[in-house]
Amino acid sequence: MIDVNAHILLIYTGGTIGMVENIETGSLEPFDFAHLNSHIPELQRFRFQVDHIVFNPVIDSSEVTPEHWKMLVRTIEGNYDRYDGFVILHGTDTMSYTASALSFMIENLHKPIVLTGAQLPIGKLRTDAKENLITALEIAADKDSVGNPIVPEVCILFQNDLLRGNRTTKANAENFNAFKSYNYPNLGKSGIQIRYDRKVIRTPDYEKKTIFHYRLDTRIATLKLFPGINKHVVESILSMKNIKGLILETYGSGNAPLSPWFIDAIREIVKKGVIVVNITQCNIGMVDMQRYETGRELLKAGVVSGSDATFETAIAKLMFLIGHKYEKEEIKIRMRVPLVGEMTRTDDKVNEKI
Ligand code: ASP
Image (cartoon, rainbow, N blue to C red; front, side):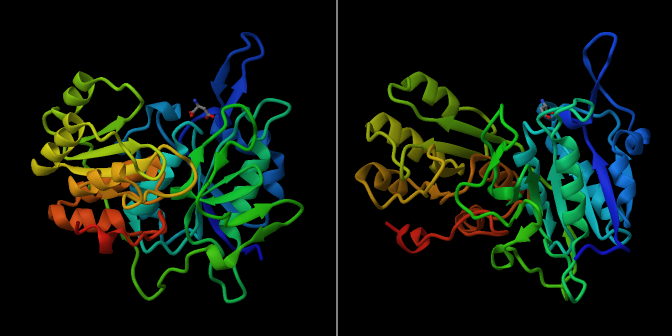
């Protein structure tokens, strides 16, 4: 039920959603957020209060960096007690990265943080912006019968899909249903009504305080395999100085070529202390390095399974864990287990002792 006394903070970071067409030039320009109500008069029909904060400058989400994630967390921390929920308007291009990062940076979240955006600017006739914004605000203000928020998670609402943020990927650059969560069910679906699937939504421990984290380490590299990948390319990526973590994008259930030069190069960087995480190029399913010889060799070389984590989540989680300066072994353990529902637990941790 929507709490009519709710206070929601709307944070506008930029992206297509906040653009209007300049009638004279035809180009897209950010609209003045002070005039939000005139662009979306429907907002006045909400009985709850919506305040807003605008990033200065507003940015296309391709410009997002971990500094922006920290700005968002700071904004939420500074307003946490005053508001019942937060809606973040964000460009779609990197929304899944931001949602993933926030899910790690805000521990034991008690309140909804709903990210949304649009494929068409708010000032266009066929825009999806209004519907997305209005639905996101409703979700942020929705409470259960005892007054707890229904979705105390970092989530993405896009078109009809309410998804756990750290499970999402931008999968479509064209259609209105831009985001997918391949390995975790929808938290909800919006149609005539918003229907939640309460059993897949996390319940925080309301006795425990929410903790805001700001340490992230960006010394991370990625290596995406493809048939015929050149030895020199691999070696130059793996010999980069000052790398603390590597996301290895493998095939299928976590497989890579058995060529000795490749396995040796991986073994070498693991020995140097780099955390190497194996995630699959497939959208659906998880890494199981036990299944084929081509995966077992990686396991033996000390590579950690990323299970069914998305690329976006693997990046954010590694930045977060390395930033917290845990011992290397501790980081490996934490990479293998879900911290905030970002991946499915695997049995690899039992077997990874090969
Ligand atoms: N390039 C834009 C952005 O991500 C696209 C969008 O908002 O959909 O900021």
